[in-house]
Length: 75
Length: 236
Image (cartoon, rainbow over all chains, first blue to last red):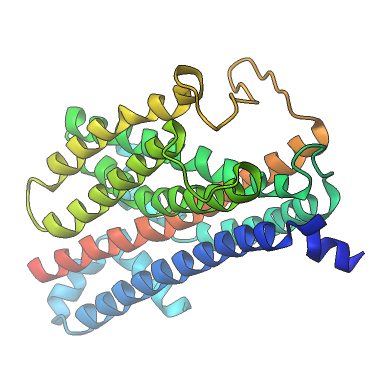
């Protein structure tokens, strides 16, 4: 049965390469976007850390900034 | 109404949703792959090569759907001067482009055993290639003009010109003699020429691909929002 699934009646090379290309493309895109996201999160954390106390206070008034910070601490 | 969809309000959801969407995607994809590669029957004419349909067709559908949505959002950002629409459109583009490439490559692989050639300048294939070029231009324009005021205008124009190609792709099989067969599924009338044993894996793979595009969209949208907030910190 396994040989049948692999050979796919002689079309195995076509079928498996089509599925492999699709899944490889998905994996690559996922990790590229994940890398971009974590890069921006790190940049945000670095910038936030370098703010003066007053500026940090002002930035923390925006809920989205707090959300970003809490997500970074969860990584 | 748009106030409820402001980035500040929805970030709490978009930042937490990816892990759940990823889990759901893996589950649906696993079931879809088992159905597509093992359980579904071979075609009486195309034999097992028909299984390529389960990646080729959903990828083509979703790349077309994403480009149409991207254009609507671009028009919306123009009319309502809503920058969030442009941000959503920008976040949708990468997955749309990858689905377009997947549709072209898997179509080419399917073409060899079915038509005896990897590539033909057939109306459907050529119009899909044109769509990939528009996706490429759209993504490139965001990259080149990212920090300039006119980026929304330029990308919107590319999307609006590009969307003219979408009905051409859809109806190319009816308007011209092509190697592609006419549509087997009509979404409006829900008429289908495909047997349920093949329709189920096709539906599952389409659902999995839609979940993947949602996952990539959410991650990219969060990236773009954080990028904006980084610029906001600079201005403090």
